[in-house]
Image (cartoon, rainbow, N blue to C red):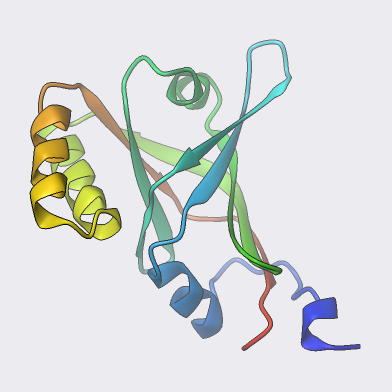
Length: 146
């Protein structure tokens, strides 16, 4: 069995290897449940704060509406065969100043062109944003280099 073949058992805290993996600006997929029980997935930006995944959206989108109705989510971050899946209930914060600060930070994290990032941030400033924080209750890691 190789490291790629083993999946670490579920754990309530992120390993050091998982934190290193999540600190890179990879995309995540958040899975929510529609009102009829069917799954919905969306690609998101995130940042890691200790063992918490912080992400943000414009109010009115389908997946944030799902979270406001049912706070249970699954978030997966993938890079090739390496991945981390986190499950749990999110905290919701609709503070407009926090929402703008989070999206500005996320934009600068994911957009390497400073001028383009600032233009996006100016566009986001016209939106009502909601911030989500996931402190996972279940974590599954499959990392080839621990």
